[in-house]
Image (cartoon, rainbow, N blue to C red; front, side):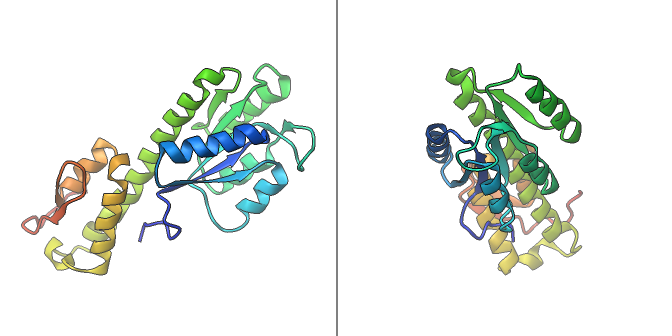
Length: 218
């Protein structure tokens, strides 16, 4: 089952100590991407507490310089980034201090441990939100496509049973619902993969299992 039990399509973890920017980003992201939920933290301590709760976010959006405790002085932090790396959560980093020595060192270090890390400058506020939307959209596409295609392969390929034998099963019904939910985020490659097993209409709302197809290659 790949449906998030919380009902969210994707969960974004936001670490930003500026209360106004924190509030605005949460509102903008949830408005831009219906079905996405944003969990907020404003300091390192709160972030680590939330990340220890057992709920793994799908993507993290975090400021490089935040206080260790609420009300403290912002400083370059690595503890939250390290924890997210341990959880294999992709991160988008924001900074308004790209020229400072400690931030430069953080960026070099982060790119060594996570080559997919993205750094966005907060000094260009007019383009900040567009960059964030673009990065999140890319990650949502990758995550949704991986979830759906892995489920397809587990259900139809690993079992080595005929496609028709899955008709009406709980696993198939769950997969169909997840495909509908994630359809708008799937990459073209993932949609083509779905089309090998289902007859799909343009918006992904109608799915009919291709019962006449018995052999699908990986």
